[in-house]
Image (cartoon, rainbow, N blue to C red; front, side):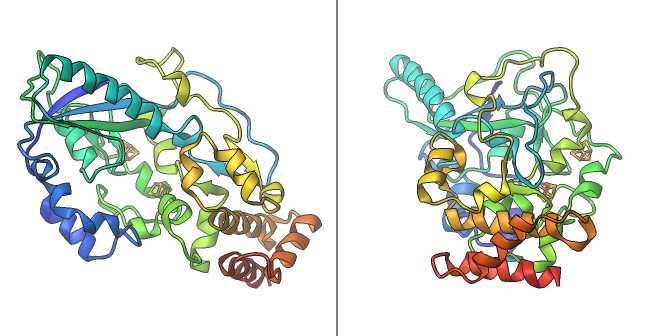
Length: 342
Ligand code: SF4
Ligand code: SF4
């Protein structure tokens, strides 16, 4: 899906500034670093007139999903089930930019897939690709929200034809499913904004330090990312027929999706991590972050309430807590987990 947005300053600049000032971005300091560019694409590409916004479906809601391995296993969010979307989408956007450059060689074209400061959901909204729901995701009435976003910011003045580019109205209505289902309650009770510093996606992927023990239980079995607020959204309900847009083959699931056995992961070394995520968007997660997350999942599984004894897993957690070859982050998390179980 493609739409065109005018390269104008953000409508929600005050909201973004307040959100940052309240520290809701956690350790994502890169969001502050290039704020002026983020709030005005003309500072990113001087003379920019248009933003070509694309949205790529990554989940086929009509196809059965790969089965989860037996518990305990750490789940991976769907966006990372296939090949690294940054590479897949950037390649296609570069091809589009090259085609445009052939016709209009004197214009500037800057392609980005999470690689430049841009408020991509606001731009996609302006381009008519969907509305931003209470869970803060871009949602299309027929395609849902399992979509990856990319942009070309250009000095070329483009217009959309027909209904394309028409704003899609907010369809959330009185629904509050995402707010009610969020395990860490990090979505504002009124929706449309969230405390990213408590979001499982942030905690498992971006946060580099130990995770506060009170957030361990809500993390459940999420190893990398979290899909809960999208899974419960009625616009992502499974379809009987093929989805109304094709899924790029590179986004289709392949191992280690959809989940990794925890006891295996707790024995990984750097080579095992590299091999598992070589082609994945998850290759930037450090091994000690993965082990931290895996230990939290192990603790949730071994916790008194679950009643699932697993001596081998418990022995592994205990060994890690005192293993000088593990990082301080991993040892600390193992100790947090053991303390929670006492
Ligand atoms: S990704 Fe998970 S933790 Fe984050 S807002 Fe959605 S449901 Fe909550
Ligand atoms: S779950 Fe309901 S409230 Fe949340 S984004 Fe979807 S439609 Fe909107």
